[in-house]
Image 1 (cartoon, rainbow over the protein chains, first blue to last red):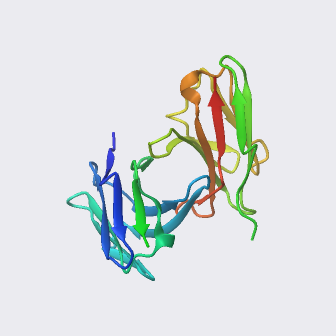
Image 2: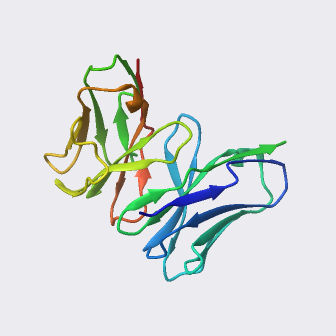
Image 3: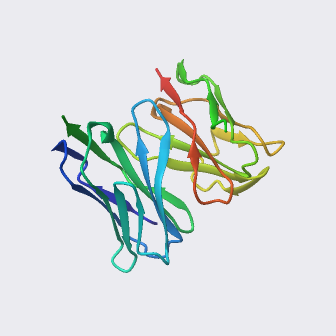
Amino acid sequence: KQEVTQIPAALSVPEGENLVLNCSFTDSAIYNLQWFRQDPGKGLTSLLLIQSSQREQTSGRLNASLDKSSGRSTLYIAASQPGDSATYLCAVTGNQFYFGTGTSLTVIP
Amino acid sequence: EAGVAQSPRYKIIEKRQSVAFWCNPISGHATLYWYQQILGQGPKLLIQFQNNGVVDDSQLPKDRFSAERLKGVDSTLKIQPAKLEDSAVYLCASSLGGEKQYFGPGTRLTVT
């Protein structure tokens, strides 16, 4: 069974700092990997989707990388802002769809 | 475009009672998903529909949970009878081509 782990579980950074969130998965037989953002009391918003054949995807200040062979993905957030405060979840699609446990990010003004 | 709609937003019931949640996906989205998110955990897929057919329900506790999507549009998830451990947020999502998913706001269920 696929296991998806995200470290750290929580992270606090000052505004303007660049940061990296990590996601690891145990089964490399995946079709794609997605990064989501979850705000309290709201649903999830898809940020980036990386196909298994791709190495990275970029959207604005966000850059996600995928290393399928090592079972790892990172989400890089540049010049963090207080509005980036949320829980970030990664999810892998293989035979089934599995979410990680998330990283709760707080950006301090 | 209108997003994924869910109702109710909040529900409090006693254990052994029944409850039903409703989801209306984005118009034209053939794939619909129901997830359970327990506090402090990532969402867990309960069931995936493609139109009105079930694609994956391997993690659905079928002794108490049921779901249907009779006309291939909106869907209902039912729990009967509820247990304390069913307290969670129930998320509905839909997708056009099975990749990028769009999520509704969720229904927060508290079982006392």
